[in-house]
Amino acid sequence: MRSFVSTAKRMDSSSIAGSSRLALVRSTAAFIFTLLCAGIVIFPYYWMLVSSLDTGSLFEWPPRIIPSSISLKAYEKIFTERAVLTWLTNTAVVASATSIFCTIVAINAGYALSRFRGKMTGAFGIFILFSQMLPATLIVVPLYVIFRQLGLYNTLIGLAIADAAFILPLATWLMKGFFDRIPADLEEQAQIDGCSRMGAFYRVTLPLAIPGLVVVTAFSFITGWDEFFLARTLIATQSNWVLSVGLTSFESQYSVAWDEMMAASVVFALPAAAFFLVIQRYLVSGLTSGAVKG
Image (cartoon, rainbow, N blue to C red; front, side, top):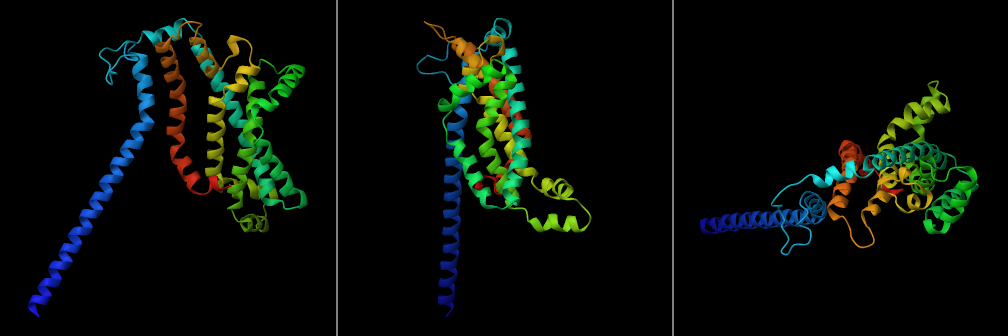
């Protein structure tokens, strides 16, 4: 009997040790996989930074992962010899105007699609989503003609409106998804307590939809920040360029100023990265609470 008990104890201890080793192997493999994925994502940005600081490292073989010398000449050139600061300001203006406009309209449109049921509501929602599928190349010519007629061509506000036209369908559906998750009973209770319909919306529903509002704002801002095709088509003068278009000016007929282009790219990426760091907590909570489920 004693031998049986001791044998059982040894089996239990060996089983526990085996489970611990298996858990350790799994956690180590997960850590290495995560580290590898993070390296794949981060390395292009690191290489962009290294190339902007060391002009000789871009085409050397084997490549120098750590630059032998650091120079800020490329950054000095882009701010003194090129209009990078103006392009960056234009980009911030267009992205901010786009995100504000899209957020305000998407809140109201998403709420209407979520709360008001009717025969045409579903068809209207599908029509909005269908407009998202149209490629920019299909409607850029009509946009160009309309903007010329309205005096919006070659203006930053015109570019913001054009960007918003492409972002709004998806932004509206994102907000609808958030409003769908908020029970309508809360608004009815607020109305019983004396709130008007609009008061119940602003005091009860909208605060609960803040994670969705952050997601829509971030999505609109980043899309407006990175947009290139419409900016290239609807903006003519160099003083009104956004930075995504300005980056193409570093490429001439026979050469490319890689160090200056990489420096401008770093400057271009920093505000967007800072914006994401600020809203990261709200963005993650918004995505996990169902924003992407529509």
